[in-house]
Length: 479
Ligand code: GLN
Image 1 (spheres, rainbow, N blue to C red):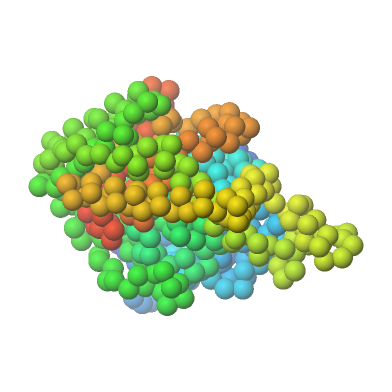
Image 2: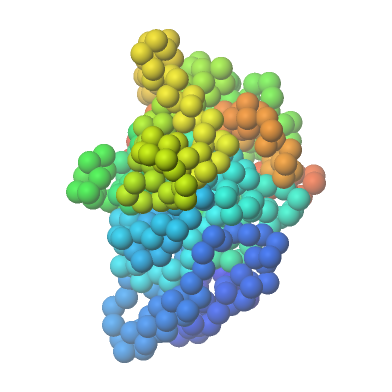
């Protein structure tokens, strides 16, 4: 079925004239029709627009026009990215009627590449969560096992790609939100280096950590989509002006001669034994493919008491500042009944935000307050420097790091919603990567005895996505 094709395989057929974008899009829309009642991967869908875009690409292809690199490929966008003229909710009641006046740069780039936009995918409210259960629009379910969560916050994007409800998807990763859902749903998820992809039009959660990244069916598609969205953007002062290589050019070069590091801290207590075995097997496969395995240490970045605490202090502090803009004045929900300005602010925010977002705004405000700033926020910034140094040190001894993505496979819906600390501990292997700004990818390597997917995480030096993708390709081929 066309809805199950990778983007690069579909492109080959489209270019050869053996498939039309309209047929491909119809096939994906049919899957959406069949699955959405159960999966709930989307918040908004625009099938008419998708079919019009597809027909336009087919017509232009017929006429011999040179088309963009994603021409005719159905693509879903996490509802954290602004799409002009469409509803952009960020999974929140406070933005449930918000219509974006402009396209995010990542969105403008996929459109320019002639992708076919399907709609906006479900997510944890303001990208805060690891299960997509914190969405105002109801939870998304994991297509592999609908009693399980798809991971989060980009759970809708991961589930859509896994279920054939999109060929490609974009998500956002602040502490693991692309990599962890990819691992739970059995797809590929890439978090680029901080600064590699523009954040313009990405609704901010924690601005020093947020990155946009691809969720795809294979590593080649991740290389393809990254190549489209990466690159300097004058509208994002943190986007970096360095050339974007053709990520597919060296994709099949293998790992011969590369050093792959295994950090002992990443294999400590709390890791599901099946996942440990899967990662050890993946390491052995990289060795067989010609890589040299080396033991490294990440004493701060790999230590949950430091890295998870550091991440949540910084992410919540930044979130409390970023979310102060939702006050009912210029956009977003405004309470129907308020007596004066103070009450209007108070009620609009109380009504508009969900419980997890409120918890984080309060904690973030607390760690930034005069009496506690030094004890929490400044300490976390100091720990962040040590985390970065840990990775610098490790990457002086190896080219790639291999680790688990998450300590467990996809958990059951409802299992952790009332236990925020356990929920936060899902992020032990992913958050340090955002704190250090380095790129990371999650690749499915095997399935557990109960059939749930297990992903492996590879990490690389800043802006070495090319090496990362080469390593990921080896993992994919040997799995
Ligand atoms: N689970 C993490 C959090 O809740 C990461 C979320 C993300 O990357 N957006 O902050």
